Figure 1 (tube, rainbow, N blue to C red):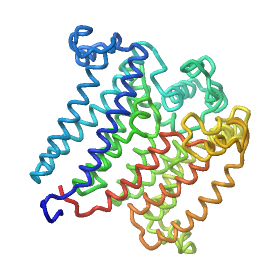
Figure 2 (figure 1 turned 120 degrees about the vertical axis):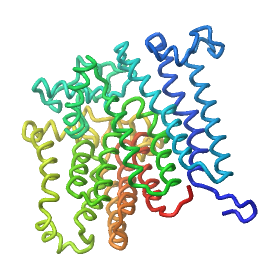
Figure 3 (figure 1 turned 30 degrees about the vertical axis):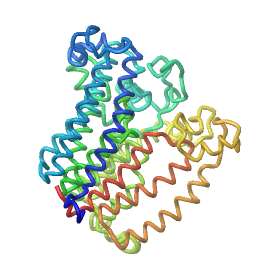
Figure 4 (figure 1 turned 60 degrees about the vertical axis):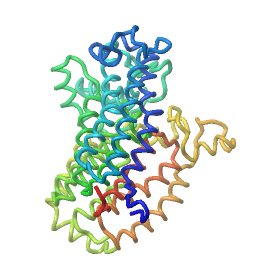
Length: 456
């Protein structure tokens, strides 16, 4: 509380002022520029009448950009939301109204733009409006499984992945995700395809996005902290624009949030099942396992000698989760172990002639330093990243583990898992922007969960 003015500086207001304005210049323009570049307005159907009333005659159409009116409308409404929010802060009221304002921003900045991307892609069969790995490859992998084929042993020649956006990267030879990434989506694919006659993986992503907001609300009790977590989750530019394109980080984030919510509510079996599902989708989730499992099973982190007894006594709690992982992954290991290992390990770590190029297309990690200073000649070469990952991650994890034994809480578990994951990913072969968005969300969520007494 400021002694002179009597006004309290609220964390959610700071987050709003930063992220809402950043999102206006990153998330929203990215989607609308993509749609405009691919001349999607004639394909928007009913959206066209909403987004650009009057068509080309609308006075806000600038240089034949028919998405300009909607872009300007979002800017105006966002500033209006900020203005109303600040007035409520001064008045010290309006907590419930602030929740509605957050949802309005999320709808305008994330949900509607993503829906536009989906509708435009389906209307024109334009796969440039979908992410190559998280959306297109998952869809094609589901089709392969339904046709009795093993995606890890197949190539994606002849699918939309070939010549995606004018080039074919090495993902046409490899599926870098765990089998759950496509197996768990098959029921949704079949239902949506039967009802709509077509499918976009982001339909499922939007549903999981909405459910994730519910999970966050259940984990964060304080109103101001909850709104902060919502805003960081949804408007984070390292997440939102990649989400609109169709990366599949939301699947893992939802499953981890579900696991945390169930463990928080003492539903350990359900929580461990959700954690197992997350691990069966993407490798990111593995760093959360030691921290969340010890909480779920009430295991003392530093008393390893007592773990076997605890595991025996609680076998009914963790066995379903173990079976889920085994039933998801082992069939593909047994069918073709070499193909599975090449796709899920060697493709990302290097060692194959078709491995993912060092630094990828974003260049946030250690590989960028190696290339910038010409320590390595180009992104196709092998480099012992695993040495640097081990050198920095193992000591850090050991230190975090000792600290975790002193404060074994859910928010600490989330924080330490993310902190341990960051150097591992930084010193990996490539670190994409959406990876950064995934990692950085969890420390903020942990902080918000720890806020027990925060003003409305």
